[in-house]
Length: 401
Ligand code: FAD
Ligand code: SF4
Image (cartoon, rainbow, N blue to C red; front, side, top):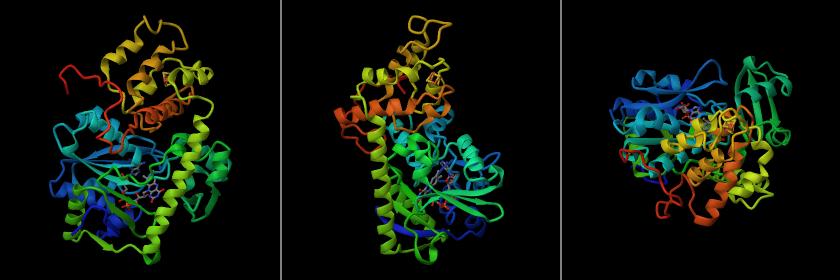
């Protein structure tokens, strides 16, 4: 039977799911099993909206609808933790399985730690992630740099250090991701800093790295991280819903090697992003004073942040005593208050930068201070560090939830 740390190659035994799935449809098969067996009441995943640049969160309760969520959307820049807390009350009243990229998983773990998401009611099915692409700049890049009409793109993925685009007529073009990123294109800037590519904080993690031999491109690599994950995989195998094979040793090595390269690259990016400041809040605000001066007080960064939940602080930061009406930029109190309240929790998910209409590098600013918090308190947001006390005070809602 399946145990924690077990590794498999796997693919779906359901032909329709296999065809629609990214690498064998294992995630989709697991989700269908969880719904059908009544293990969960709903599945939270992502489906394609208007086109492959448009990723939408979807809450599925009918097992027959689950196939809609198959496939990977690399321009899917959303964070599902926000959906969990904002729309389904942190899974307080029902059980849900969530597909998580590492940043979704980190944010969900952080919110579990803070009592905002109920751990016992959530199954985290992780997918590896080497980074997401910002939808609008990516369409522009495909048109201007790849010479491809964005509407003709059938598939895009990062493989062997290149961003490869495949058109609907089967043409393929790849450009080195390093070269694109040196020119300000490629992955989102927070993803370039991210050093968690395999979500080891989820119950189970799936990805294509390390699948070599006959199953390359046809199966996914599965790694189990918790007893909950082991029990689920056992159930799926027992019901003969997936085929499995033992991973090839060389494949395991390749997966580790790619992961190590990505972690090193992220480390270099962090050095670059955090340079020129001590990381102390006031020093960082000072360094980014010019960027911050364009803030137009839309409060979008706060709304988008999956870790910003304190209602009292929200109102206070908008109060006329801190932010006089009719003036822009916002007094630094708004950013300062938000930073003091949640910077220990920041998981570098990039939602704030994603929405900022003034293109302020909000995520980089918060990550710079969060890095200092990690140094001082040894608290790593979103990963297993239950033995380390929370650095800052939590703010409780009136009913102590
Ligand atoms: P499927 O059965 O096709 O299911 C895929 C699941 O992912 C579905 O539940 C779907 O709703 C969900 N999903 C799709 N897009 C998103 C999104 N943007 N955010 C959250 N959930 C989403 N594997 C690697 O080994 N290396 C990588 O670098 C890598 N990068 C990835 C980047 C992204 C943005 C995503 C979403 C996945 C990435 N993967 C990567 C994982 C890989 O693409 C497959 O998801 C994995 O192998 C499982 O395949 P499957 O056929 O079992 O998944
Ligand atoms: Fe200011 Fe940008 Fe935040 Fe809006 S999203 S409040 S402009 S920093």
